[in-house]
Image 1: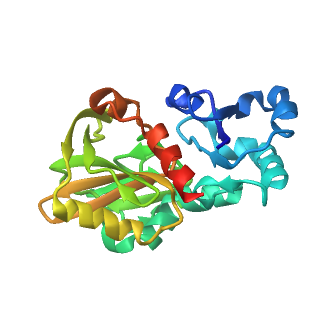
Image 2 (image 1 turned 120 degrees about the vertical axis):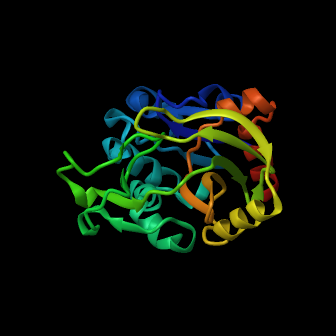
Length: 256
């Protein structure tokens, strides 16, 4: 099976994907496209990175359009995501809040939220715990943010799902605070309640082949934090030895 991964230079998983696929860096598109466009691929995975302004997908609208026009109907697009619009529609946290409302803390579009001290603010298009504020002071474009009820997180987990299969080992993460960055610190097995919670979330998005789902264990039960369809997994690999890029393409091979 021949695979193409489209991503940026800040993607921490480049080495893992290079073992499984041809990697097209969007920053080098002009130099690389001539060879790519004449190749045949079975799968194309458009990864997206919102953590830096320079790698925001809208910076590469032309490149995504060219890829879409060239390979639609010829290759399978991972997650059924084949365009800039479909990337942003899925990754938009306000869209996710509407789709996954039963699983999330109470959420508003930030410009429609009450002005309270118990809210956390997240940029609608962001990743890697960037674009988070613990108050609304200084946010001038509230329509581009969501506001969520701040929850008491006892433990934060990252759960990976590949082609509908839930990986039973989850990463344990330090939660984002005003003084602490997110960091994977350990792993543990999911309990049956957590497994079912993830399954219920995936039932809402069966088309997604690869997801990193962040959930919180709270005194009020499990809560969804966010879903990332271009998840990082280097720390998971170093702790568990499980290469999720290999797992993804093994399942795609069987699926297609």
